[in-house]
Image (cartoon, rainbow, N blue to C red; front, side):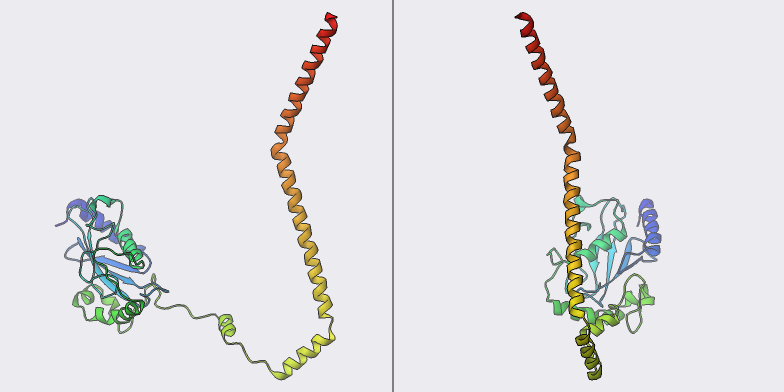
Length: 267
């Protein structure tokens, strides 16, 4: 049973994560037990988990936030063992590194970040990129066959992945310019002939040469300006040294003059 402090803290965090969910993450507690949270992570684009949907749970201790939670992933994924306590810096495997300021959003963001790495830990498994992609393709159907998933996330129980505002399902389509670059159009012979004729009758070569010469002069002028600016900057930064040297020499000259005058008086 949650302590009063844990209940208050987790209620506050539920409101916060509902209003501003982390990217690719949805999470909520059970209605019957605020200490048991369930989450869904969508695989980010350009990762082996793209298009995947990963359901898991976080079990908080009664005296949260003073002790860390247990973290599990339930959907087969190729990165972690399923329904197994994961050894992470923000899990109950490492109470010494736990920070009470961390929240549900912090924990799940850290889990996603570690999922995208290859570092081993207790509860992690090894698999190929192709195996991870295969798990990703099968993940949604696997979740639809999970009674707990359907109970907690009915809005996500659609034949295809349901869209989430904070988790795009697929990459945006290529821009037309990129498509045309990948598949250049075949030129019309008549257009090619007109362009060839125009180019041979126009002074394009001389114009290009003049333009290049102008550009070279502009570059030279810019470089000269940079050199002058650097010299002036050095003079400004060293002018106080010059002034001190002048004052020192002036004092030396005065001292010499005084000594000469004293010697003359003695004679």
